[in-house]
Length: 142
Image (cartoon, one colour):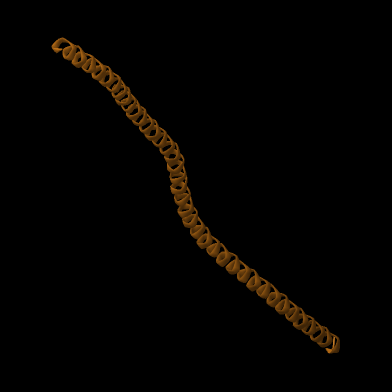
């Protein structure tokens, strides 16, 4: 009887060990799967982070280039404004010089007209004096 109880006890112990072995194998498998899943999740996070950084870097290059272009354009606009102001000032000076020149030409024209008028008057006086002189010569006794 004692040996039979011992055999039954050992058989039950073996069954439990087998069940526990199966269970521990399943638990080990589940643990391994969890580790693998965690590793894959970390790899996915790392890959997503790398992709995000690459995309942001790519976009930042374009944004930086646009910013540099904008700064260059702003500088060119300021330069153009200064040059336009200088040109406007110089154009104003040219217009003033042309107006002064025009006025001088008008004055020369006025002087020339005045000189013609004086010349005509002088000729008229000279002609009148000539007639008077010839008339005096003819009326004088010889």
